[in-house]
Image 1 (tube, rainbow, N blue to C red):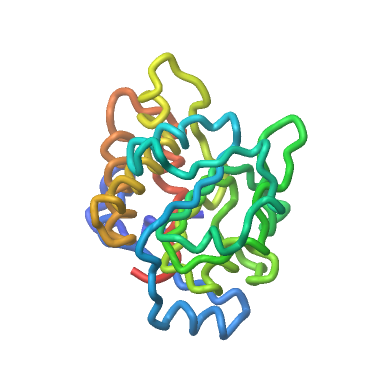
Image 2: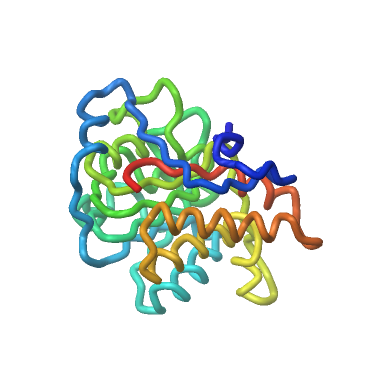
Length: 238
């Protein structure tokens, strides 16, 4: 479930990609394909962030990148019908929600009720999208009607970054900085930080992958770090 073997030219031990890899999914839709190959105007500013109430690394990452006055909202209490679709059409979208292999059309908030916090109906932005949902990346057999990821791309998102399988992140730490030092938190923070520093989306994706590769080869790495390194994919324009 990784393309990394195609982008790794030096055959290093961890198969860290050396050339950028981007996918243009068709989702059985010619309109989806043509939209991704057409010019798109990224909104000039704004951030839309929804996170599971227990995934505190989202707060640490976004406050360090966008400042403490950011627009992060938690689920619970937020549910998908609380979200105005127009509020999603901003420069940066970041969702840290529960996804599943069974459904690509809804991502959920935190226990005990696991409410639908975001659905395919709200997937409306021409900005750059980062998903931390398990199984959040597009998969075979889905269309823009039943996949949040494909719906974003069909509506003109410049890029979508998501995970092919299970995502991993620490939920507690004595030092909040530890929440973004490992696994998903590290990748997500590095990607957002690189975007905010002015890197193009695919360049920011490469920066995050290389950071994960350097960390995963070190003495404090966890197997989750290596899985995160290889599970993240980039879709859309470069």
